[in-house]
Image (cartoon, rainbow, N blue to C red; front, top):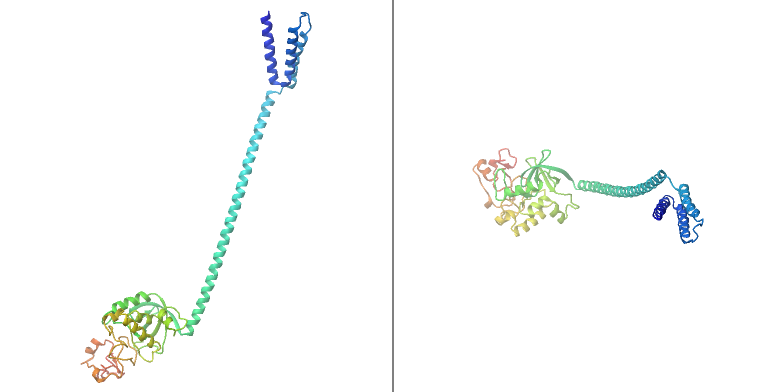
Length: 361
């Protein structure tokens, strides 16, 4: 009997514990139930009425559990709502973070674009300033060139060391200098001089300047050639660095060859030739006389008379001992392909049939 009673009491306690899980407030009834059991066991009076306390505890535990228990659906719903709320908070936090990141990236992109725009504007401004500067310099250069009588031309083809043809078909002969022949006849260092002129002038734009004469007897323009516009066309440093006629003489590709009235730069050319000869440059490496006719030949001084295409000619003051005689023009042209003027030692009137003071032209 006692065992059955103990089992029932145990089951009652377990039941009340379950109710306590469902509704914690129902544990009050469990406490009353246990107190009633304890008091009943201690009482010596077998007829005590403490059983009602035990029953009241069991009943109150059940009633309180029913009153304060939360339905499972509500619990699940509350749990779901809480989960949804937590999830929403996380999503909102992630969205906020993504928004902040996007705003930061947009700000950085705007800053980058602003910087690029500023750089582009600065570059455009610098290019515009440079363009204006170049245009101003070009205008100034053109005005300076005009004041010195310079004309801009493009070299279409180089004939030899001292002659070229412009892109518009005009033939130009360099004034005051003579390079060794490399076309109708060949002289030492002629090919080198021709190649040098080709490397320097062919296809380039240069400035040409008239001294006095417009053309020679072959209708070639007689010109000084400037590689760039000089600030002062009589300044020696400018002549040395910018004039191509002077460049040929300074580097030993040509000898000075003066024909009045084109004598503006003759003294400079003679000076430059002496420097080149002392340094044994180019054609001067072949001897004191160079490799073609020129002002520094020991048998001639400065020349006079018309401009020619070949070497320079001795002046009219040459002695009779320097006279040259040829049987006919065929023989003369073997030595002087272009003939000779009346001031030349080889001139003879019998070879000048048209009486123009030029033999065997």
